[in-house]
Length: 213
Ligand SMILES: Nc1nc2c(ncn2[C@@H]2O[C@H](COP(=O)(O)OP(=O)(O)O)[C@@H](O)[C@H]2O)c(=O)[nH]1
Ligand SMILES: Nc1ncnc2c1ncn2[C@@H]1O[C@H](COP(=O)(O)OP(=O)(O)O)[C@@H](O)[C@H]1O
Image (cartoon, helix red, strand yellow):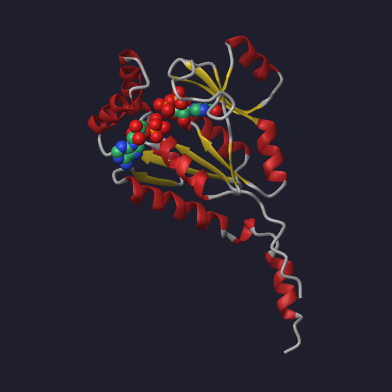
C-alpha cells in the first residue's frame, strides 16, 4: 500500500506581541528546532540594529523602495508600526505554500488581521503577553538595542497592541521562557496535525482499506 504523506497544506503561523514580550526569541528557537518551518523575512524602513543581519532578520530598505513594493502589490500584508513601515513579501509565502511548507511570521496585530482575512484556512494566530508592563520595560532596557525614546514609544504602544489579543486563536503569557517555548511548539505541532491540512490522509486511508487481511 502507499504510505506517501504528501501532499499537505502548510500552516501560516503568525506570532505577535508587544515589543519586548519575547516573540523574536521564541520564534528563533522554533525555527532552530523545526527544519521544515520557513521564516518570512519582512521588509522594513527602520534602521538596522547592532547584531542584526540584512536579509536574515529583515530586508532593510528606504521609504521609496518600500513604496515601490506596495505599488507592485508585492506584500501579503504591510503596516505602519512604531513610526516605520513593515511588510511581508508575498512571493516566498506563495512558493512555500505551493510546496506544502509552513511559514512563520513575527508581525504585529495589523498584519495578523490582514493575513487571516486573505488566507483564512492557513493562518494560525498566536499572541504573546508579557507578565507585566513593568517586566516589558525591563526586557526592552536589558535588550539595550533601542534608544530611550524608542523604548518609551514601544511601551506606550503596548497597551494598544494588547487590546487586540482577543482577535487571536491562541494567547499565552511569556513568563518562564522554556515553558512558553513548549506552549508555542505544542500549538505548532497540533495545528500541523489537523486533518484538513493533511490532504494525503484520504489516499492513505484508501490504501489501508484495500489491504487484504
Ligand atoms: N505588520 C507587520 N508587522 C511587522 C512586520 N515585521 C515586523 N513587524 C512588527 O513590527 C514591530 C516592531 O518590530 P521590530 O522593529 O523588529 O522591534 P521588536 O519587536 O521590538 O524586536 C513588531 O511588533 C513586529 O512584530 C511585518 O512584516 N508586518
Ligand atoms: N521569558 C523571558 N524571560 C526573561 N527574558 C526574556 C524572556 N523572553 C525573552 N526575554 C528577553 O527579553 C528581551 C526581548 O525579547 P525579544 O525576543 O527581542 O522580544 P520581541 O521580539 O517581542 O521584541 C530579550 O533580551 C530576550 O532575551
